[in-house]
Length: 451
Image (cartoon, rainbow, N blue to C red; front, top):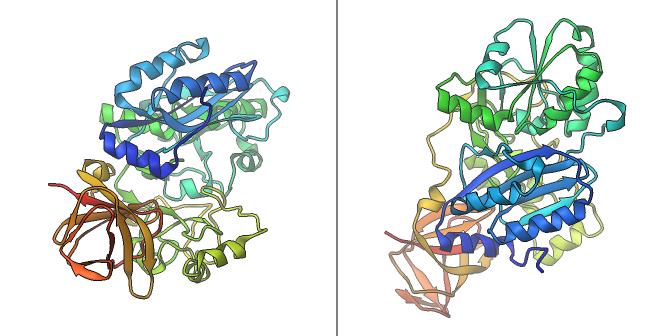
C-alpha cells in the first residue's frame, strides 16, 4: 500500500510532459468533524494517487484544505472520491483562472492541528455563525457603498501584487497576525459599518467572519469562494473587476493574472513588475519580486551576497548553511533590507504598467522531446555539459533548456562539441558541451523543440 511519493518533482514533470494531457489546477476546503484524520488522510492518498492527482492538502479534526492539480480526464472520478464523504458532496471546486500542468509536482497530504493556522481558540466562539456570503455581483455592489470597509485577509506578499480597490491591506506575514490588528483598527465601527472581507479561496474568511461577529461586528460579509471564484464569475457574467492586478497562489505558478494592471515593482530596481521568484541560494530561498533584467543580472538571487554564494562549489555552499535554520522557505517572510523597493501595508490602487500578453501554458503547448539532463556548467566559460539520453542532437536544432529557476530558455544550437571535438551530430551516450548565455543548473533539462 503506497502512502507516500516515489517520484521526485523533476521525474514527475518529465512524465507530465511526456503524457501531454491537460491538467486542471483547483482548490477546495470544507469544515467538518473528522474523527480520525490519519485514516482519512491515508484513504485520500490511496484514492488520489491512483488518479495521478497532485497537490498540497492539509487535514485535521476540523476539516480539509486542498490545492491540487488533476488530469482533466480524471475529474469525474476525482469528484466521486470526494462524494464518498457526506460533508464533501456538491463541494465547490475553485478552478484556477490560469492553468499550468506543472502547478504541483507531488501529492502531499499532511495531518495538522488545524487546516489554517489562525491562532484562534474555537471553544471561545461559535464558528458556525459566519458572515453573509456574497457572489461577485453582490460583492461589487457592496464595495460601492460608502458605508463599507473592505479588508484583505492575506499576507503582504499576496496583496502587494493584486488587491481590491480601497481595501485595507495589513502588513502581516501570517493570517493570525491580521486578526487582532483589524479588530483594533475597526473597533469604532462595529455597529455602523459593513465589514467586508476576502482572501484567496475563501477559507480564511470562513472562520474570521465568525470571529468578528463574536467580537461585536454587526454587518459582516465575505467573498464567496475568494478571489479565485470572483475572477471566474466576472469572466462568465461580463462584470467589472474591482480586483486589480494578479492573484498570488500557493503553487509553482506563484500567481494568476486577474487584470492587466501591474501594481507592484521589482524589489531590486523599482521597475513595474509582479513576478515572484525564490532566491537561487538554497541557504536563503527568499520570496521576492524580480524583473527579467534583474533576473538575468542577479541570476535569480535577492542580493549580491547570495549571488556570490551560488558561484561557490556546492560543498562550500552546504558548509555555509550547516547548522543554520533556513526560515525563508518558499512563502515565508519575503522581506529583506536588500529589497529596496518592497511595498507593504498601505498600497496604491494606481496601476504602474500594463502586463504584456503572455500564455502561462505556453511551455505545455510547445511540442518538445527530452534529450538530456545537465551535468555541469562552467561559469567563466559559460559552457554547459549534457549527456544525451534520448534521440540525436544536431547543429541547427532549436532547443529549450528548462528548470524551476532557469525557466524556459529557447535558442538555436549553432556549435557543439563531443568529447572536446567540434561536431554536427551527437548521439545517445555522448557528452555534449556548448556555449549558453545564461547559468545552467543541475536541475535543468535539455529539450529539442519540434515543429
